[in-house]
Amino acid sequence: MRAIALIAAILFAIASPASADDVTAAQGVIRAQEQAFGRDDAAAAYSYAAPAIRQIFPQADIFMSMVQTQYAPVYRHRSFEFGEARSEGDRIAQRVQIVDADGEAWEALYTLERQADGSFEITGCSLLKVGQAV
Image 1 (cartoon, rainbow, N blue to C red):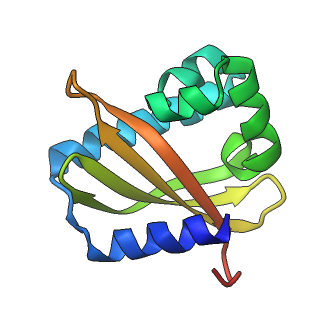
Image 2 (image 1 turned 90 degrees about the vertical axis):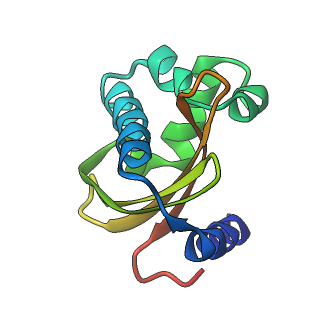
């Protein structure tokens, strides 16, 4: 998990600022998934995951269970605010500041990739408690 966060941070640092349209689209996907988690709508949340994620978690309920146990601050939180976004080609990295249900601060780094139909889907999410070393 820490290695993934480190790799994502390095990629984020070397990427260029994302176009406003792409950022808006990517944030819309992240927000839609976040809202689906809030409704416990596994099918909707799963629909925003990229094919590689769906291959790892072949059913929506399996995906939702993983999020509930390994990404609790993403699943349930007090606040969820977008930060800086970067892009490289058809990929976007989007930072999100999260305060979890217990009041702890986290930073998530979402990665998204443009699909053949032009839409963005989530390829990953690295989660790091604020103040914790990578």
